[in-house]
Structure formats: C-alpha cells, structure tokens
Length: 143
Image (cartoon, rainbow, N blue to C red; front, side, top):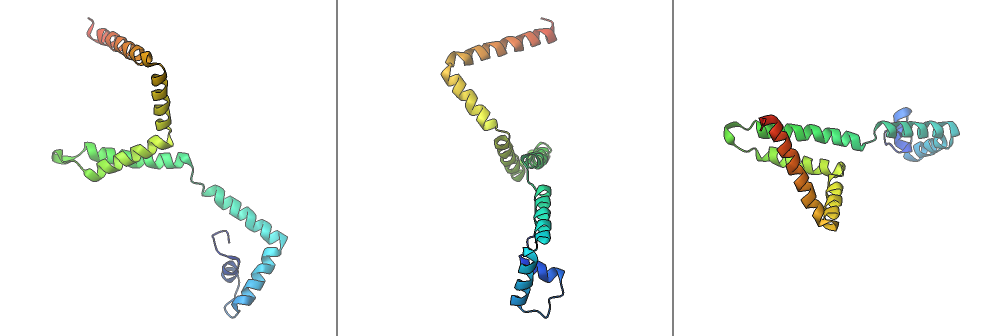
C-alpha cells in the first residue's frame, strides 16, 4: 500500500491469493487494515515514503540550475557562430523558472513600485552608480 496499491492489490502481493475470489481478497485485506498494528505500520510507512520523496524548492532550484548551466554552455560554445535555438530556448525557460522560484519577479516589482513612489530615487541611484564607476576607473587608470 505504501507503494500506491489498494488494499486488495497489496494483499495479493503479500499473500498467496491466486485461488481466491476478488471478494475474498477484499474481505481479508479489509480485516488486515482494521488491525491497529497493521494500520499503524502502513501509516508510518506512508509518512516515511512521503518524507523521502518530497519535491522541495531547493531540489527544483538545484536541478534547474544544472539544466540552465548546460544550456548556457551550449550557447557560448556554439560552433561557427551558429545559434543553437534549443539551447537558447532552454536557457530562457530555465532562467524564467529560476527567477520565479527565487522571487526575482517579486523583488523587481517591489523595486519598480519603490521607484514609482519616489521618482527622484532613480536619479540618485544613477548618480551614485556613476560616482562609484568613475572612482573605480580612476583607481585602475591612476587618473
């Protein structure tokens, strides 16, 4: 039952039921399921199986990152300047899904709302970015 069988199917798998009618199998399976010890073992087994098979956000992100990286690698290693459209499609799709799973779209919307509420903020951020860039450039060039 832990693997998804109904009580009758589980009974057939566990016992020699070849000569039994469907009704007899169902009756015997029902008796077993009414046994407190058997039903406890089934519940515990189901809970353990669920815990082991949980598809979590972290696992989804990890697998999407792997596919995304493969698609990216295929794009940048394109031979003869030919664009691999399936790699591009895969890269864009996995990037979009990763952005949604990591709430990038929410952060972007929050930032848009913040800038709409204070339009001068965009100018201040741009000015500060220019100053930082110019400072780093002068440090590198010595000018």
